[in-house]
Length: 166
Image (cartoon, rainbow, N blue to C red):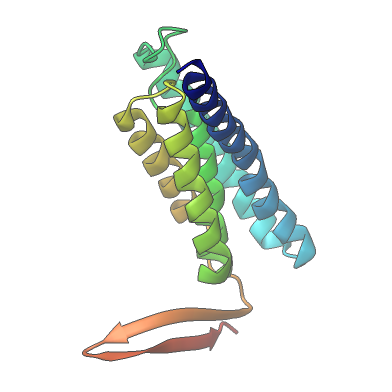
């Protein structure tokens, strides 16, 4: 029985550490992509959404002061990890399309899951963080003036739309 609990604790620790890694990796990839594509306009949009997200999230944390499920402090609402991950994922999706955005959203959802699993947040903290991060990037980010590929489905028709902004 002791082995079971050790493995369970180890798995939980791995989930938490993986979420901690993704919360850095997702916005780093979003920011790095602006350099890779020589996208100065996108970089400015990233800055605006990233710092707005941080200001709103930290402002709410310091105002609301909700205790964490594990009792460690009073900064549970909203989840900063989740807001940062969803800000990066939404930036990638809105700026560069689903090819970049979908994997980032999967990672961001895992970050939220890891925070609840680690007993650092309640589900509503994670949902609020996801909403704040998403809204900050939706507000400040415009599609890249490159080629965008979007899946389409309409009246039994399925396909992709390829478009380029001029």
